[in-house]
Length: 189
Image (cartoon, rainbow, N blue to C red; front, side, top):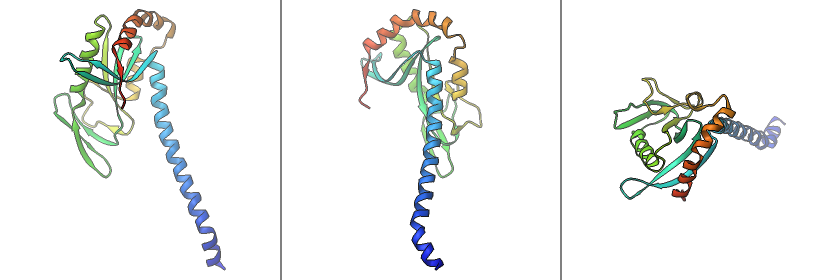
């Protein structure tokens, strides 16, 4: 009788456990992403994703996220890595050591400097900043490089407590923001 019950209900139990696991995974992913969206909504009065603008050498440069903030324009590159990140301003390659793997990638700050310069070339009178945003899965045990930020740091550095007062700056930046929109194309990425 026990074997009959086990075999009859086993697919149902396994299916239920699998659905529970997938639901928990989905909730974790949503919480992770929704926190990012909340911070971006809090600091940005407008946003353009995946835009292509001209750069100084008659080419084009891709910008993942450009945000209009009360402090000016913010170029944001998002890195979603899990593990300990070893990187510094002067290192050519950065290393991530995760639970099951180790890999390197080129220092992302060099490309960010190029993106900042390309945007400044278009909007000369507006402050332009850039950050490489590492989400919650990354840990910098040896200190964070200059242009790297976490979600909390991004909210602290670019968040605005008085949205009405910030509107004055946004209105001053609006014509420059429109100029960026006019010069920019959209990436098909």
